[in-house]
Image 1 (cartoon, rainbow over the protein chains, first blue to last red):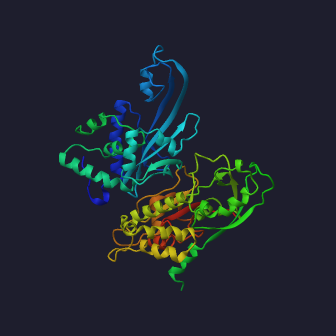
Image 2 (tube, chains in turn cyan, purple):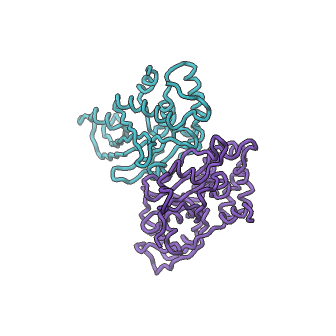
Image 3 (tube, each protein chain N blue to C red):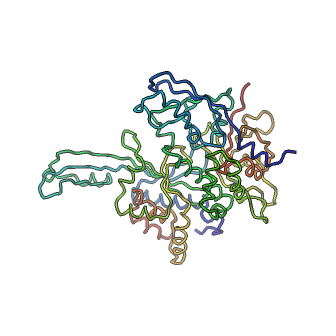
Length: 220
Length: 275
C-alpha cells in the first residue's frame, strides 16, 4: 500500500491510523496488550496499553548474596518464576505494584504521533514525574538525557482531558525522517509507529518485543 | 472607522471582575475575607493570583497549605487555559463578579496539571506559541527568532506590556506576500457538553478558489452541531473574548486580531442564556 508522499500529507491522520491498525494486529497475535480506542464524539482515536509492573524488594539473609536485592519484573515473568522457599529468607518484603498507561495519540499540528503516559499505584495515587524517572532502567536514562526531545512535561491528554506526561513532539520528524528514508532504500515494509515507538518507548519504561520488527517486514 | 489595531488593544486589556472565597473546609486561624481582583482575560490563573494566595495564607498555618487550586461551582479550573476562555465557557451567563473558590488541599490529581512554579506556566505558554506557529508557518517564524525574542513574548504577557509583547508577536502574524494568509489556522473549540476537552483540526484560511473561509465555514466543517439549525432559533452562542463575532467574519482576520497571546483562537460554544 503506498501513500501520497507530498510533504503536506506525509503523515496525515489516516496514515497514522493505518500504521496503528497494523501494529495492533501484531500486538494481538503476541498478546502484547495494545488496543485502539475511539473518542465518543469523533471519528479519531488513539492506541493504548496498560501494564502492571511488580517491584519486589527482599532483604536476603543468605551470606553469599548481597544484602539487598531488588528486581523489577513485568507481571508475566513474576508469575512464571516463583521464588523457591529454600533460597530466600525474607526478613522484609515490600511489594509495589504500579499501573502504567501508554497512549499513542496523533498530533495534527506537528503531523506526528505523540507518546502520552502516566503511572499510579493500585490505590489510584499517581506517580510524579521523578518517581517514573527513578524506575527507568539506567541505560535508558542516558538515552533520555541525550534524546532528541526537549523535555518530558505534564500536559492535558487531548482526547481524555486528563493530566498525562508527554515527550515533546516537535523534534519527532527530525529523527524519524532518516529512518523513513533508509527504509525506502531497502524496500522493506515500514511501519512508522513500530520504528518510532521502539525509539521513544524504552526511555519511559515501554519496551517492544523484537517480533514487531519481523512483523513489519512481512509482505502485506 | 475603528482601526483594526484598536481591536488588539481591546482584546489585551479585557478584564473580569472576580471574587475569590476560601473553601469553607480549609483550616484557618481566623475568618478569611473574600478577595476581589480584576483578572486579565488573556492571562493564566496561576500567573496573576499571587496576591490572592498571600491574602489567604495569612490566616492559615503553614502545615495546612499545599498547592493552591481554584474551582467554580464544583468544577476544578484548569490554570493552563486562558482566564477569558474559562469564564466564557463556564460563567458568562451568570451575574458578575465571577465567584471562584480557593483551595489549598486535596489537589485533584485526575483533573488538573500541577503548577509548581512560574517556569511551568512559561513552558506551557511557549509550547502553545510554538504549536500555533507550526500550523501557521511550519515553525519557520518561531524558529528564526532568537531566545531573547521568545523571552520578550513571555515577559510581555507576565508584566502586562502590550507594546513589548506585540513588538515580537506581529512577526507571528505575518505571512508571505504571495499567500493570502496562514497555512492553517490555530484554533480550539470548547464545549462543556462533550467528553473531549476541545476540538482541534487542520483548517485552511481559504478555499481552493481563493475565497476566504469564515467562522461559519469552520464551525460547519468541524462542529456542525454548534450552529444547527440554520433557520429558526440558534441553540448556542459562539463566543470569543466575551463577544459573539458574526459568522461571516473571515477566519484569517479573526486569527490575526482575536487570538489569545498564545496565538490560538479559543472558541467557546455555550447554550443560549435563558433570560
